Amino acid sequence: MRQRLLTLCLIAGCAVLVAGAAVITASQDKTAPVITIEDKEKEITYKDGDNYEELLADVTAEDNRDGDVTDQIFIDKITVVSDGTRAIVQYAVIDESNNVGTETRMVNYEGTGQAEQNVSQPEAEEPSQEEEAQTEEDTSEDEQAAQEQASAEETQEENTGELTPDGANPAIRLTETSRSIRAGESFDVLSVIDQVVDDQDDAATLSRRIHADGEYNTSVPGTYTIRYYVMDTNNNTSNIEEFTLTVQ
Image (cartoon, rainbow, N blue to C red; front, side):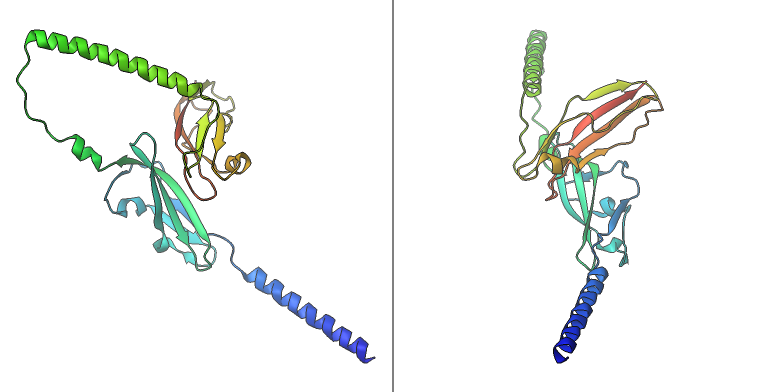
């Protein structure tokens, strides 16, 4: 009788512990706050050394438990893309349960090296007509050579087989840079993805983290620009590839 009573007590105690653990687990906050950018397509230019006031001006954050956490938003990273004229700004915010919310936007970028490139040079003597003619001829030849070299490099890049990550940053490549469709025709935004690679994440993981920024309407004729990039699970950002969708 005593053994049965002891067994019942143990069962009741275990049940209480399990119920308590369930309550604690249910009460845990695992939802990250959501960052909202009011106008993601707004033209913003960030220069090296600028403060973040303009970048944060139209950005808010809301948490399911902590409420408005806009004042907790910070700039986690600014990544300059390969063309050197734009950058990806990554925002982050952390709630009281240490859940992290992130968001990104594209901005125009101006580096500090621009001032050095604009340093004025000493004035030179005016060239004669013969010298001007020779200069124009040399310039024409140089431009032609540069165009041929650029064309060769572009062809070589297009023929490159396997895509490789840029160090810790993932990489993305498109099958084409533009496409024309008729108004009303469907368009799969991921159909132009050729490859996505990373030094750690596999293609299946990356495929769920591809971003396609830019608005388009397949029912309204016009020319639309879509910017593709991918972020790995460590929030490293890839190169940005622009795609032009023409709806006729």
